[in-house]
Amino acid sequence: MPSLVDPVANKTDEGNNRTDLKAPEPEHCPGTESEEAGKADACQGCPNQDICASAPKGPDPDLPLIKDRMKGVKHKILVLSGKGGVGKSTFSSLLGWGFASDLDREVGLMDIDICGPSLPKMMGSEGEQIHTSLSGWSPIYVSDNLGMMSVGFMLPNQDDAIIWRGAKKNGLIKQFLKDVDWGNLDYLVVDTPPGTSDEHLSVTQYLKESGVDGAVVITTPQEVALLDVRKELDFCRKSGIKIIGLVENMSGFVCPNCKGESFIFAPTTGGGKALAEEFNIPFLGSVPLDPRIGKSCDHGESFVEEYPDSPATTAILDVIRQIREAVGDPQEDEDDDMDE
Amino acid sequence: MYSTATQSSPSLAGVKNIVLVLSGKGGVGKSSVTTQLALTLAAQGKKVGVLDIDLTGPSIPRFFGMEDKQVYQSSAGWVPVYTDASRNLCLMSLGFLLSSRGDSVVWRGPRKTAMIRQFIRDVVWGELDYLLIDTPPGTSDEHISIAEELRFCDQILGAVIVTTPQGVALADVRKELSFCKKIGFPILGIIENMSGYVCPHCSECQNIFSKGGGENLAKQYECKFLGTVPIDPKFVLMVENAKGGLQEIYGETDMAKIFAGICDKAFSEENEEEAKETAEEEKSRAATNGQ
Image 1 (spheres, each protein chain N blue to C red):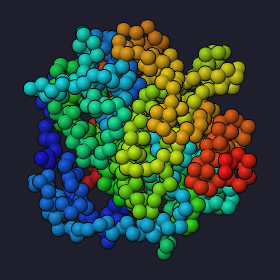
Image 2: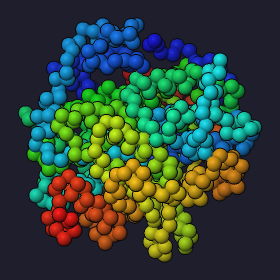
Image 3: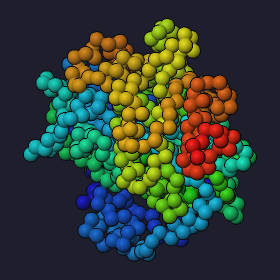
Image 4: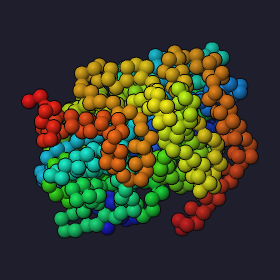
């Protein structure tokens, strides 16, 4: 079992042009893997200069390996949001359950939120451990056709903090793409941490050659969240990631007592719908807040299966249907809903 | 160019107390809690500064309705944004340095580290009773950097931990508590945010994200439980609609009373002493274990 007790990042250095650095990279670091490494102006006086200058140069030798591994994966979907706590992991798990409910489809879930992995708990597989075989790390299977990978499976103790800087996180993300024996997949759903930083840059960079189908961006209706989500959309544009669409989560709240609807996070600026129009991207729908979603996540159950009559379920299934259409794999049983 | 702090930054010399607002989980209300702690302390006549080190998702300018303000460069350094004429509440955030509010800041770790270093060393805070530091979720670059920059500060009061009640959030918050223990930040206490929502139609309280998780966590980690904060759509609306001037209207709200209680608990002298002692014990224990 790959464990974090013996640091994973060091292992990645075998056959890689990265060596362990003495100190964190300086502000204007040209990148330890660039041609300029160790030679640029910014490298003067950096404690890592000798290490970088003597390391072998050239393109990352791992990229072809990643491409090879990703050959059997038909559709790669990123779940993004600039804001934390809007439901990226919840939605990733719902996508996982949703895609896998079609038994002809093989689904993989990859959690690249290294410092706050939530997927193991949400999928009810907390405490599992990863096993290695000759063909690589075996994903944890939640059901026959739904496998997943998360740093949560590698912690000796669930409460341990992973206090890692960016470079080390990138090393693990690379291993998730390069060393995990995903097999042939129809869908690989990648759950990301909030923000626009190392994890996001790395995963797009590593998957560039294999191609990503696109990103599903999650938001909540209030402007404080939309503000951060705007930044994520800007990031997608800059890095050339296609946006499959925007989902508004926690839209309204239907009181189980009086059935009255109210807004917990008021959409004072028009919510997700207005943002989608502003950026000219598809709006995939609004998922109302149902307290049972949170409970299902805490217990690792599939909300859609447990509560098929909830309005949230209807909304979620509709979003999944649209995503499948957008990536060119429409659901067969809903022929009448299709335009073509 | 490359250097680590060997002594406390001179720009923090006039700051009496430094408080970090932390949570392993995103979207639990770190910025909202930071804002309300700042407003409450300022209403008590304290001089308060807020530093937002969430570089890729700065929310503090929006919370205070100060999105259009800018930071000025003076001969002494960056001048923070003051929220009103009385000049007892000032803010610093990367949001003030962006040319457009939709711009993304796509930075890897080293640049984030450099920015935080500048925030700690180059801002003219002046005399402050409290400097509240709002952080991004996780335990990564920003957190390691701020811990390194503050290593030689003796003004650190400790960390206020924010969580929501559901299990998924608590799991991440436990990681943040482990981080604090490892770094040696005293823990002032835990706040349970989004604890219950009162339906505006029938006035029944609904536990949207369940309840009681924060209190149990505090018991488990033997730190103080500072209180529960319900979801108040009126506060969300107030933040959404207020164009500045939050200071005047906040005092009237229900939330102000709750946060007055939280501040009393968190910043009482005995609590501060206790938190410091536990952190020192932890630190020495960690040191002996490490050898």
